[in-house]
Structure formats: structure tokens, C-alpha cells
Length: 281
Length: 307
Image (cartoon, rainbow over all chains, first blue to last red; front, side, top):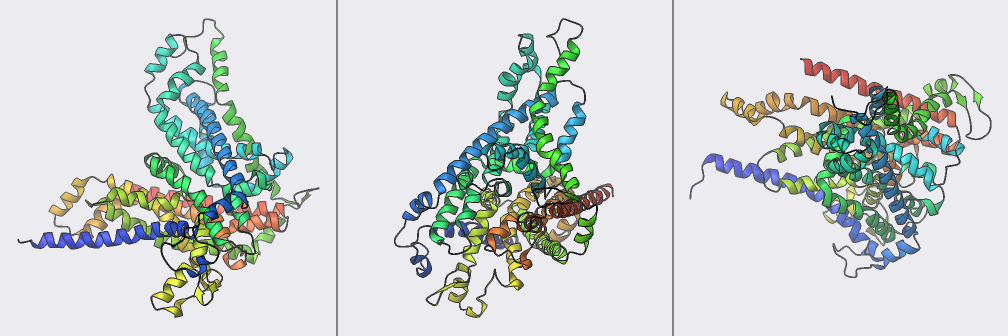
């Protein structure tokens, strides 16, 4: 069997490429494996056991994190915030996007451009005046305050995504519904929203990840432990003094696994959402 | 045009405009209260001396004058710049190399793409704590506790064992590397998407003209990729300059000057020393510099496109 020069070259080049790609793959996955592995060690074996996979799997850390570490509260709070913020964004953004795309009213384009401009201007210290405002409105340390702020965070991009989608959608079905006597609100709910399902999926997943992973506003607005979401709770748990590493790792795993699971299930939508978010930013 | 059919009277047009407008009222209300108002309030408050409660004292530009000579502030700007520089070079070079590798006919392409985007979906708090644990420099009965130091001991380089996160010489670089670990998947995905839009016939044509791989890369791939590269560069700068939560969680509560970045300064002006006006002045200066950078880059990339 003979190989010509090009086949040999090709083979070596591809092998090198795979070595490179696999090295990076390992560097991506190993820390996550290490996090899960460390979450299953006991308070002493974590410092002494060198094995990749520990002999005794100490699932008890998850119970400790869930109860004594207060992670049950943080986890449920994160769920509450994620669900309410995403629901709010979907309703409010799709109403606005529908109007910007389909309906006529004065000042339409100008208002839309203000929303887009907001996406382009980075506002790194906005949490200072936002805190002052929330304090005036007595919304500091309330679920409502945090939810409203987070709805605002995701609003502009979601409007832009949905409006772009509505613009490309044929208005035939909507016009047919209009002839049948539907009003604008009915058309939005019965015709436009179901047809926009692909874009809504992107909006839902993008914003879910965003809310679940948010930290800064949760820190500025929430100081009551019973209201904190996971990211903030992790910071509280990891106090300045002694850190219980196995339990902390269990907390990290509980925070990260839902995100990784959703990513693996929905990766197409996520990549689409994140990159379209990036292009305008 | 076939738009409004639900009106019979002459004044329906303005009535329609009004009911149509109602669709954007919730969005506009939230936007004005939580974005527009704080936006202007940021500029307004930067002119006051204020502890967050009680009366404000108008001080004009004094906060900005003070900021101009605030060494800690400019140090933090430089440190964010250092993190950004490493992200721009190391992280983006890695992302580009990976994208080029995955743009070929190569097995497991989908698998690689799936894996490289896992770090970007994790939160900064999770990534920070995780790497804090792996870079831990503690010892327990003579054993290195952290994975990295432990590994270095085991492969026979105990002299490389180091206090990575507390030593001012290495802590900022560690932050930059972990930040790049978390972020390179972004650049990878965008650059790969860009590479895949390049017409394969361009490569064929250049190859027929006798161009080797290297010239193909510099004379076909790179020029075609300029718009995407500019977007990635801009996002890297904006993202890395604003790095903050990662530092909080990675450098274990160690809010010391040598790992300070602008957002941490703003944060500690607000919570640490209760100087709300000063915090706003810092935010204004920082925000304006970011906008200036992104506009310069945009103008620059428009120039390139025209050439």
C-alpha cells in the first residue's frame, strides 16, 4: 500500500490539528470535572486524596450546601427571578417589537433608534444612580425592584431581535386575521407571537442565561439573604475567613449544571442569540 | 396599501395611532425609568459631593479635578488595560487559530464547537471561585492543596510552585488568563462564523494562481475577515475593560490595589467610602473613554472597508 506525499502531509497536519484542538478541549472540560470531583470529597480528603476520582463519593456536601449553606433559598430565588424577568421581557418586548414593525404611530422610528442607541453605549457605572433611584422608590431589597431592573437590562436587545424577525415575516396571515375581524392585540397574540417562535426561543434562552448569571445588580440591590439569587449567595457563602471548599464546590456545581444542561440542549439558539447580541454591541 | 380596516369614522386615524402607541408604552416606561433617568442622573450626581443619604453639596467639576490626580484610579485603568491587552493578543490569537482549524474538513468539528462555548456560558462567579480553588497556594501536611501547584510538584518542578493569586507580580496575569479562558469561545464562534461566509472559490482561484497556504492566509483570509475581526476586537476591549466580578471572586476577597480595575474603584467609592458623587464622576469618565474607544475603532474599520 503506498501513500503519496500529499496524503502523508495531510495526515500529519490533521493529527497536529487534532492534538491542538484536543488540548484546548481538555483545558475547557477539566476544570469543570475538577469542580464536580472536589464537590464529592470530604473536608479532609479534599486536601489529601490525589486520585482523579475519589474512592468515597461524599454526596452529603450537596445536602449541607442546600440546607446549612442556604442554597435552597438562593436556588429558588434564582428560579423566581429568571422566570419572572424572562416572562416580562417576552411580553413587553414582543408588544413593542410588533408595534415598531407593523403599526403606525408618530415618532416610531425615532423611539426605536433610541432603544438601539442604548445598546451601543456602554454604561459601566449605571448601578450607582440606579441604586439611588431604587432607594427613592423604596424598591431596594425587594424582589420587584430587582425584577424590573433586570427586565430593563434585556429589553433593548430583545426588542431589536424580535423586530428584525417581524420585519422579515410575511404580513399575509396578519392581514387575513384582520379581515376576519381581529384587533391588533388579538393579531399580536394569536398570529404574530406563534409565528415568531424561533426568535422568541432565542430571546428566552439568551435572557435566561443572562439573569441566572447576573451578579452586579443583585449585589447593589439585595442585601437581605432571603432574597438573594445564586451568584450573590455564592459570594456570601464564600466569606472572608474560612472556606469550606467541598461545600463551596457543591454550590458552584448546583449553579453551573442548569446552565450547562440548558446550553447542551439548546446550543443552536444560544449561539445565535449571543452572537446577534454581540454584533449590535 | 392594506393596513387599517377597522375604522369607519374620519377620526379613526388618530385613534389608531393612539392605540398603536399603547403597544410600546410598557417598554418605553421601563426604559425611561431604569435607563434614561439613571443615565442623566449619573452626569448630574457627578457634580455633587454626596454620601448617599442626606443633603448634597454642589461642587461643580471638583470631582473630576480630584479624579485627574487620583493615582489609584489611573493605576486601575492601566491594570484593566493590561488585562485587555492580554485578551486582545493571547485570547484572540487562540480563538482565531481554533476557528481556522475548525474551518477545515476535520472530524469532530461539531464536538469542538460545542465544548469551546461551555466556559462562556458559565457565570463569572463560578469561574472565579473554581480557578481560585485550582490556583490555591495553601498546603496541608506538606501537600500542595491547589491543583496547579500540586501538578507542578508531581511533574518535578516544585520550584515553580507559586502563590499565584496573592503575589502582585502574577495575580493580574492570572486574572487575564482566567478571563481569556472564559472568553475565547466567544471570539472562536464569531470568527468561525465569519470564516464560513468566505467563498471557497476565492481560495481555489488563489491556489490556481500559485499561492501557498501562508499567502492564502494573508492575502485572502485576513482581508475578508477584517469586519469580523474588528467586531471581535471591539467586544474584547469593551468586555475586558469592564471585567470586575471575575476579580471579586477569583482573588479571594482580596480587594487590594494591585488587582483594582475601574469598576472596582467605582464600587468601592460607592460602598466603601460612601462618595456617591465621586463614584458617578468615575463612571462618567470611564464610560466616555469606552465610548471614545469604540467610536475610534468604528471609524477605523470604516476606513479599512473603503480601501
